[in-house]
Image (spheres, one colour):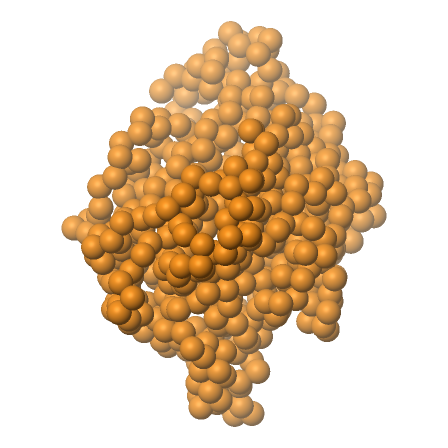
Length: 515
């Protein structure tokens, strides 16, 4: 297929480039049987370079704010690691500001990787790695009134029946139609070919810390007055003060669709950044939103957000239909996404928007803490010093492997009885379901920061105002489909050795970059 002027602009050539000789050269190479796009681009760059690679990482990262105080050895260790990669990210030439939330913990050791609980602002640029692969990971709550005599267990049964957790997606005979699938978006280069991923993951929540949470909420007069005064009265118009209501809360992202859009976006960002900059780590690569490719990616993100909101809504609709009940009000928020405010693009990696919307209302949001603690209903504090974000949850104190390590015996096996006791104690009083059958101890409250600590720091830094709580009744999480972690196999030991070697290589790269 012949290349066009638009193709070359999307690849980074300015609009005033001499396109005729470039297109002639591309046609000549294709006619010779060359199909490798990267090779053709390299040859075209020799003929007329797209742009000189003049940008570099700053000598020092810009300062960033911290709405967090480490209160334990584990928290301090995590905060130090998060600070290191955040300082590296703040050296990216398009990043203008940054902040860490109370739930900050490292998301990896790669150079310039944004921590969980991190937020940055970039000027006219989107950094795919700064919003992460789980695009639009988000929360949604729906209030409903169940008969007083209805017990929690049958409601949890209904919840398990209408959603799905675990790897993969729904089989074609279980696909669920929805109008979001029919939107004319599939020619977008970042979405093309992914329509079946959108189909297979509807009513599908995934793995890890994603959940479906059943709770109860009682709003008093003062809380309702705050919500009405803040401009959110329509959500709670059918809620009476002092009366208990049930609430379904779901937490998930965009599943296989978003993961593939992210991968495509990251590859495009790395390629585009190499044309105008040198020495930029992959995690700091960006797309210019004023270029065709950047605009396409922005539009793809908007579709992924619509798809994810539709996914939440579908699960809630199916659940209420199963119970034969009607919704009284619904609201939610994203916490892994990019938001535009003027020429600045705010990126949150596990950070909840807490600014004022276009009509001046403080944003209404949800902050979960762990499966056995209340979910907070909050109004954004709009603190410019922290980019007007709030935390997205409690944040991990211990990695998944570290949680399990505390129960490992000297012979390498696990103390199953101790694990069972710990899980029972941590989830006491609620109906916990593990969709894949076996409990995942690493996703229990044992792996997370104390809920009260995070709540206190939300208030301390005035990130948000708590106006309600959803008390836990039950929670559905993925769980483990193949049992708990077993004794390390030779292959796992080799993998650990390889990871250790990669860490050494990353450290060497980091030292060279510092020099």
